[in-house]
Image (cartoon, rainbow, N blue to C red; front, side):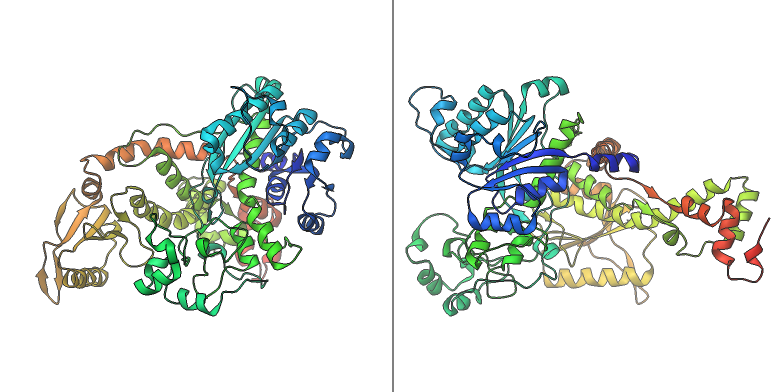
Length: 599
């Protein structure tokens, strides 16, 4: 963890940026959020420029054709004499004419990529960021991308590229884009190590997470006929939910073609992330119907899915606003890329994970799961939170004198005790949710049993300690399992205990109405035996425990910006420089005589 002032200094540092193909500002806004100072944005679309002016009137917004500006030179439009740190923008993917075996910059003339490269050559920024569709990787059998990389290298840059999925970066959307990063050769040599793309975050957002209390806005509509179609489709479903005769009529000739066609008559679910936000919201082949209402997502709902803040206004008619949002880079994806670029320019090496060598879970999934748990930890406490349980100064006085401990140590112990109470539940979820990464049909439902494998018909309730269930709770859980095996003849139910008395996989023996009963299909299983059942490896749980300290170290090292903020002592000293006196005044200040309280 770093100190608070170090974090504040990091956030204050601004890097200069010029953005091409700015659109409605998704990329520029995310980079601004990461700490970049926009010196110029270039965009040709009238309405997108109006959107930029509406939201950032202080930006230098140049409404012009990029090819014209590349020919004239962009520096004449810059009100800035310093060195540009970053050139960014997403030029369209266009084919090149391959006359020779290897193309240089001049051979790409006539494409918008050429204009981008010409401006890069003129400005010579420390780094560049080019964003594009995932298909660029395979376009023309990969020759298009390799040509671009060759040109960037010719201009003087070390180039890195990677396909990033927005869902991994605080965006409730499955949207894959290629990010191409260039570092000027002298900067790369000075920093001394390669750029590393941002690591995926553990938590993945769903539509339910982001579409709460969305502001009213323009919204496209469906025809009555299409509403009738979507009324027959369940949440998360598509045309496959339709009766066969209706499906044939709706799909027409597409019905007999191959492929899943799951984008047709697609109704979204609250429990999933959105699909790629498109420029038109109601195309037959790519429908994204609202989970509860028979309509597409509204303008502001699409903006939320693209992680735009609600105060970012879009200018133009409804179709133009949908188009601007659909063409944008998700703001939070841009933010995390921006942070990684900023870290790199400061010479901060991205922390990477080790190889944990566990056969039953990938390095990335284990790292992300531990990271998600750590991020749930409580990092902040103030005097108001500290005193929620009404601190007893007399007890602290006894404890200090009897155990010969200084008051700051006792207060720190109490702070950690309070923080630990809120963290304990997170560890329970750590044990439960890890099984969703094991594959082979294991899942962690949002309701009902804690862990389920529908294929194997195994239904699990998980408890942290063997002694935490009273008889009433035990009976209720057992009867729930009885109901399950009565309804499903092949079902098996497990009570899995993290801390059990023994390593065991035995029938659960319980007392119901004074009678001892058990059933072979209702079992009491220790966590080590459950790991063996799930993974097929006898010592899988032991292996996880051996690797866990290393994984936590890797995660904590990657979270430099997470800070333990404890203002309790500072606030106590405001009451009185004497900590013990301040504790008494905190509890008894309204009592008779305590205004003049002294030891």
